[in-house]
Each structure stands twice: as C-alpha cells, then as structure tokens.
Picture (cartoon, rainbow, N blue to C red):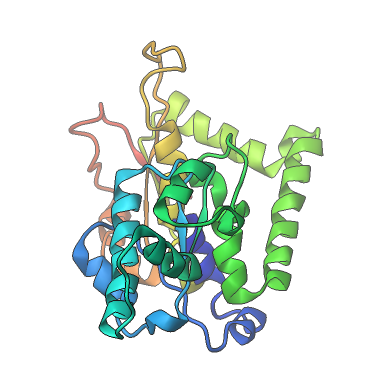
Length: 271
C-alpha cells in the first residue's frame, strides 16, 4: 500500500510524469483472478519486468500471484514456439523477466531468480514500513527514475532527523502526532479518526495510514501477551474530501453518535 500511495502521489508531478513517459507501473496484491487480469491486460510480456516483493518469499498470497505471473510468461513463450522442457529452461525465462526484493536467497533461487537479481533490505524492516527500502524504491525508481526518488528519500531522511534531534516536544511533529493520537484514543476515548485529504493525489493516503497504524497498533495486548488496561488502537477511515462530502460527511455533520451503541458512547474525531 505504501508503494501505491507514493506512486499515486507522484505520478502527475511534472518531473515524475516526464521521467516515466513510455512506461507503465501496475500493482498486483489481491489473489482474486480479476486483479491479475487487470494488472496484465494490455502488457507485452516481452517488455515486462516483474518485481516480487516478499521479505520471506513464503507469504501464501504473494507467492500464488508470483507463480501465476511466472506461468503467464512461460505460456506466452510456449505460444511463440520456445521449447521449455526443464526447470533450467524455465529459469532462463524467469530470470530475464522477474526480480525480487527479499531476504530469503534460498527461496528466490528455487523460484528461478538468480542472486544478482535479488535486492535485499534489512531483516528488521516490517513490510508496512518498507517503502523507503528496496521494496518501494526499486519499482518506483524504475518508473520515475532514481533522481526523483532520491528527493523522496531526502525528504524522508529530513523528517527522521527532525524527529530524532528536535528536543522541544511541542515542535517535534511526529512525536506530537503520536501523543495526540494516544490522548484521543486512550484518555478521551475517541474511537475513530477520519483522514480527509482534498488533494486527489493523496487518494491512497488513508489506506496507507490504515495499514501503518491499524496493523501495528490494532491489538489489545502488549508485547508479553497481557491485555492492556486502556484502548490502544483507533479506527482510521477516510476518503478524498470531495467524494467524502457526498457520502459519510453528511452523517458526521449531523453529529449522530453512530459509534455509541457498541463502544460505550465513544465519539469520532477528525484529523
């Protein structure tokens, strides 16, 4: 989700749009066959490169899609009269069209991808935070050019330094957002947060924050498995502003306490 969020945010930026002319970047995550057809329709297999993003190279959904795409390449070349009879024959084709971002060289090799086409990253990087690693930067650089993505990395680096070096809590933006979030859910009991960007380029921002926040913090127990004595996970929802105005905004504006019946009269707040 992080990669697609950055892609949507940058795709019409003048420098990125110019750099990506003639290329198409698509995403495949759902195991629904319709998602595969959506991602591959109109592509020329001979001019297609697939980046498989999998830290362990064992995630069931990811590997199902990877095998489906591999068969898509093999079926195409068989239809062109190429003899593919052995695993070595398959690997020759796979290795020309598929690379991986992974930490498991044993599994990528078994799949048919040579070690020099595997882009590693740190084993402590969780998938939902990995957009600044090879997981995100490789496909985005292939599409937008590394010069543009270097600026993106520079921006990420600047906020890292800001967070680490700003001693005044009231001026430390990430820390203040974290404290405000904790206060709202754990102290005030606000159960939900609306994220409402009016820039269409940020259309994937709310889903990205859902993954970052809810997958990490959507738990009722601590690291030792003991139940927390307070609420620790807010429900994030949202939509680009203009679309939201004609859907759930109406309910929010009327002030209906729509979460009260199942959450002890907690309220919703917006950011």
